[in-house]
Length: 410
Ligand code: HGY
Ligand code: MN
Ligand code: MN
Image 1: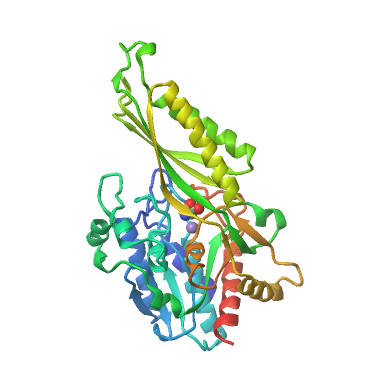
Image 2: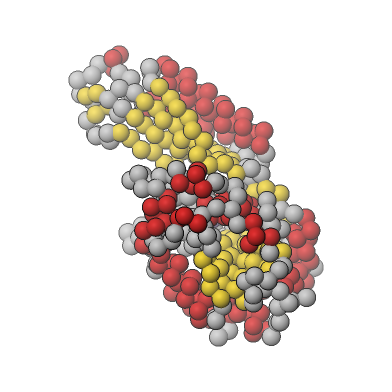
């Protein structure tokens, strides 16, 4: 099987799993049946290639070429879960490309001198439990078992119960330093979530850094009442300060060249003819540096508190997820630049930052990590329209195979 047919075949088989027929987007939330379908797909890919399959203590999946306990392993992969109505490429492109790159190494007759593995990190998007990169955070020791056990989804189901229902023993979750210590490099290929490569005209680029970013829950508590009979002067309507806070987020982000988004809201009771008692909004904010991010979020929270006080509404703000800035190590990044430079006929390989979080960012605290980006012609991501041309995807596979050959076969 040639790498290209391997890629196309894998892509075709994975595409329908967890896809919502109405929106065309994906609903592959951690530890749901849709997630299980993609995890079963992963296991099948490992079996088809006679790779040694493992599920680690945190539910991350590994497919090994060589000894899983060997030292100096080179690992590549990404995630298969999605955001609500996410696109087909965010995550899966990295996993499919990793298997296809292994196929390409075998086609080349390359002989790895160290173990190679493909991974699927569990619950990267945090779409169900609110915290990003749960599988890699647990393994890197960035999330305690207690904090993981406290995570709940919108129905109140805890992470451990959800893992159990999907057939994974939650008792084992926790840091996995021995496993990470055996890894000499983790390289994640990911569709670019922006248009930088489209603008430079390159199919593949290298990540320089990940912006610091986080998620904050804003709970506006007012007084539920009748929408038709309550005088305006007598209202304590939490929707008003919420609305002012959304506008303040855009204003503060624009002033600071940062980004801030209220993309998720829950309203109690949610009746058309009832003034809400609670409006719960989630802020996602990101900036090129920590100081800017802190000042943007502080300004947004200040505006929210002022608006809540004017309406006689209470406000609680809780930080639910946070990832500090990640600067990818220069040594591995430079090595990737050299490898990719051989194919680019002397054109400098673009090196670009991203505002999107990744498992590679979490793992960089414990393992030398690097990322490859594949051109996204529209830049759209976290939406059904997310796309990358097949030619660019195959260029990404070849680039990843070149990198793996350099790192594992020399
Ligand atoms: O939200 C992010 O940046 C990533 O897609 N988890
Ligand atoms: Mn994503
Ligand atoms: Mn992703």
